[in-house]
Image (cartoon, one colour):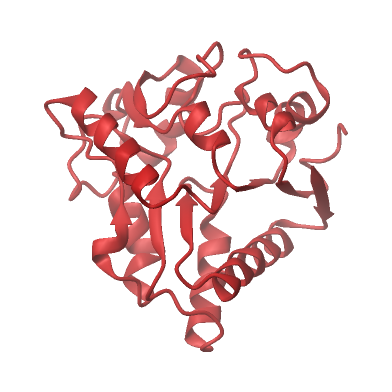
Length: 241
């Protein structure tokens, strides 16, 4: 495990973008696992800047997103598909056929989850998986007490996660209570993991994930067992290490 502590969010975002860009330079047809939320926004902006400078080319890249709200269609501005289009995909030269985001409106959820896993396996797995971390230690939408053996599956979001995500919606009643998420097993099968965290609100979760006991109560703690993890933190997120 490699831990990089930087001064601020901007520096974290730049370092993360350079790691993604380096991965693509080394392997132009890289399979990237991507995350949403506030944390990776700066990284995506930096990747767009690198693309505009002709320093990175996405035309052969394939992406798999970690998760999607269950019950939101792709056109909904709060869907993670819309998030990815607005914050990255519309601004780079990625082949739209190479973009994979779980379908939140699927009627047969088990089939969608199984198909998603199959597509990842057919792509020979994820080369680099980007992760954020929730205040309760969740990664993707894998909440505390998750089954570590789970692959892509439908999850029930807990109250803390719903409350945290309500800032993106008009009211807390509008926040979906379920999501389709890559499971811990899927995440851990990635060849490399890049975890990002900033702010004092993530400090306790980071301390437990890195130095605490490996436990489903802190889903991110499982990354202690992965053989190629880079964690980039600002000083506040690293303050309890």
